[in-house]
Length: 381
Ligand SMILES: NC(=O)c1ccc[n+]([C@@H]2O[C@H](COP(=O)([O-])OP(=O)(O)OC[C@H]3O[C@@H](n4cnc5c(N)ncnc54)[C@H](OP(=O)(O)O)[C@@H]3O)[C@@H](O)[C@H]2O)c1
Image 1 (cartoon, rainbow, N blue to C red):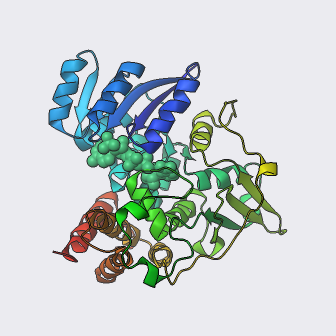
Image 2: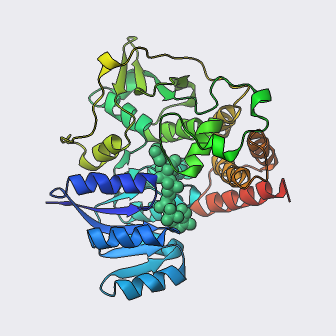
């Protein structure tokens, strides 16, 4: 039986790589649904190749164009369109490859419809980890990590007892500005910040990697995926990105998962789990690597990581607020409205103003995120 897949955000970096994985494993997977944002041209190409049953695009006008081109395919648009793709009757597993908080609602709805989730959209768990994990448990839904770090931890935990875990060690490349100090970062441009040393990714995650907020989001993601306290999640800078993350057990043993920096590997594992299947992707040859190095993160220069721990420990709506403020700050930085160093300042200011709701429902989370974006926007307007 083929696994039937929907990909939310198929025109993005993870979405595209997911389609490459499926292209290589056509006997195992059937693509049921695709969704795009603004990139109509690429979505049209993908529809022609994979002939899905349902597609969604951001705007109504582009949906009309798609309907004309593909009259036999169900075409939807906007937020409801994303949910329709994720919840289509024929879908077994949804790859959530949307960037940002927009991923939350369709993922939440898919879980309620008992669809398994291959989760790339970490913002879903950052905003509403408690709600999502409980909903997944109640509906017997698997949430399989796509993020390379979380895939690594998931693999290291396989076959081991959770109560014997001492800590999780998330590795971080350090991003394009590793080793620099605040004085060096006052005038960095979006172009420079977008140049990640090891990974080729979408714009938002690339800026998040440069500020270390990406690692902060991943700390919160790990807290929920692996049901572990923040005190037991550490971050270490590993510039070569060969070790994708590690788990330390109570006897002092550390298990690490390694590989080339190729997102198709964790995407494939999330889709084929619990199986591993052959692929022709370039394999890691450690004899050709001279050094693997490790260092502490520089929290003075990159305070976003500390802000994420702080928001995570406060819990409730604070993580959604941090996420919303970060998303807006990144947008303003990409539009040259604020400087790189102002990104954490915006987030800290918005977090400082927020009145926490301790046990929020999904609508409280969405409301808090919206409020945080508006507050962040006020920083420069
Ligand atoms: N890229 C990586 O290597 C990587 C690694 C680990 C985790 N992740 C996580 O995976 C997620 C996706 O990252 P990415 O790098 O693939 O992002 P990306 O390249 O920016 O892709 C985002 C996708 O979402 C779509 N989209 C954006 N806004 C939309 C909207 N309002 N309505 C409908 N669709 C919308 C985009 O459509 P258009 O392009 O058509 O506008 C695109 O398909 C993020 O949560 C990220 O943190 C990424």
